[in-house]
Amino acid sequence: MFSHSSSFFLCLLFFSVTLSHVLGDKVFTGTYGVNYGRIADNLPSPQSVVTLLKAAKIRNIRIYDADHQVLSAFKGSGIGIIIGLPNEFLRDISQGEDRAMNWIKENVQPFLPGTRIRGIAVGNEILGGGDMELWQVLLPAAKNVYTVLARLNLAHQIQVSSPHSEAVFANSYPPSACTFRDDVLPFMKPLLQFFSQIGTPFYINAYPFLAYKNDPQHIDINYALFKKNPGIYDAKTKLHYDNMFMAQIDAAYAALEKVGFEKMEVIVSETGWASRGDDNEAGATVKNAKTYNKNLKKLLMKKKGTPYRPKMVVRAYIFALFNENLKPGPTSERNFGLFKPDGSIAYDIGFTGLTSSATSSFVSFKGVGSLYVMVSASCAAFLLLVAL
Image (cartoon, rainbow, N blue to C red):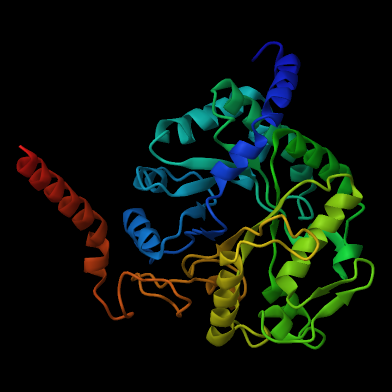
């Protein structure tokens, strides 16, 4: 549909290098974010979620689609959002820039600049997954999305990325030994090359909970929960790790370095701990979820790097804002939430909820957002009268 696409794309890559560091700061404010999943039938309205996030002082979120009601609700909130281009759209978007243009004009442009859309995650956990066709279309889809953003003069404010699971790695212990899987590498390396050119970090979904759940006999739960433990020693780098979270991030840095991308930043797109699980899901308790998320929050607030990349400040999105009661799979999948649907905290890690207990009236919670607007408007009118 578009002429001279190749030449235009090369010009975009040249121009984008100068903007990559500026864009990186815009995408993620601070070090702490949360994933706002919505596979549930009991969640508060998006307007109420905005009020909840503001009360908790959470400034970064990720959603897994581009829901118009959510994007409208976040208008004027100042909260940065990474929206998702779901896996089922990748085949179509990879076919041409015109498909990407249609999607962006429908799901992105109408909400700018009021809603702070700071990134588009193209797919989720594609490489290493079971659908090989998606492996093939991921890079073309990402390129088409980026090219369209540039044509619309939006590439300087909206980052194109794609989060990965730990399944892309052949091994990750010790961290310095981490490598990408042989079958993943032919798809991963061109993707990394593209993301390196446009200044996109490597996004990884890192879950010490899943590692512990799968091998509780050989993993010290204190190591997974940031509690006091002997830790591990990486003989190659001569570095000591006292928690698995940092080790997982440095494993990603090691894998990137081995394929020539030692300067690429790693951002954790998902991490969390389930507060409930099936009988065979070791460690899924409220106590452990509270311990993990509280200690993780403390770590992120320090704004420090990892043992292997001490100057690269660790940033992470916590999974998840709410329990999602309609998610398929084991019980743990439905129990990662930091908050209950009524706005109260699921457990205390230092956040302020909108209600103090699960028995509080949901009606008052639903009305908080509109009440805030009414009070603000009334105050503004009063101040104007005083000034006159």
